[in-house]
Length: 139
Image 1: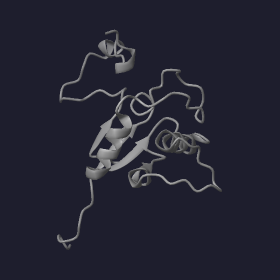
Image 2: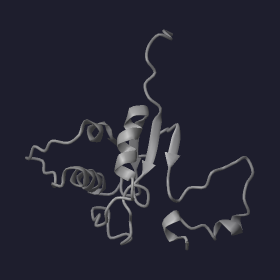
Image 3: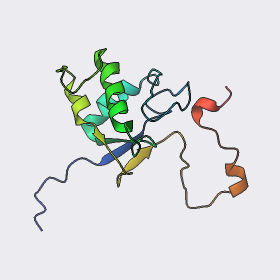
């Protein structure tokens, strides 16, 4: 094995709804994405592509039209225009670096609004029923 070969960037898996897309309208279908980004999400994604191979994975990913809708949503947020298969739109290079996964990738780290960080001790399962994603918590 040649250890001189570059290993590439570690994979950062990003959830879409509630992390990148604000998801304030709730679920309306795999190809319906009506809300703006979470504050700071686009800036974070741009910076993250410098350090990671960024993969976006969502419950939308395996549904018909889901990945195309997420990709179009991101391009529209960045460029202000919809993307069509016969159109040419200039997008920043970082947007083209984003990978759209059909399955959860083997990631170095995942960012998800509905995740639990396992610390080596299992929580009380009943207590997990009280979990709320950040955007559902009362301030």
